[in-house]
Length: 104
Image (cartoon, rainbow, N blue to C red):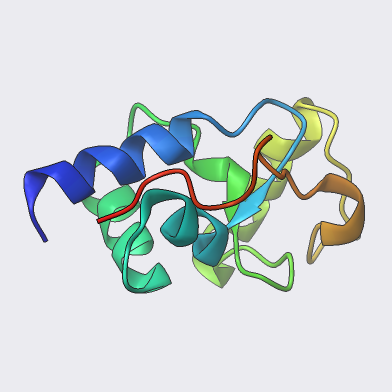
């Protein structure tokens, strides 16, 4: 992955507003990345200063090892869960103007 893609992913994650969530796939599409796995890698390696907790799996679940912390951070922003996942129909963020903002 080149530096440009890395930065586009960081920008896409940073753009998810408080009170909403996006899936790894949403962020990949928004940034023009080839796979959602790249988003997870960027967040793991360089996401400490980003609202990483707003990024969940497409079914609304956080990774099991982060579930309690992530759902707690989301609850503090008004995103409710059932203790296991977020209702994506209610809290999924959709950027204005369509999903894909960046193109390779």
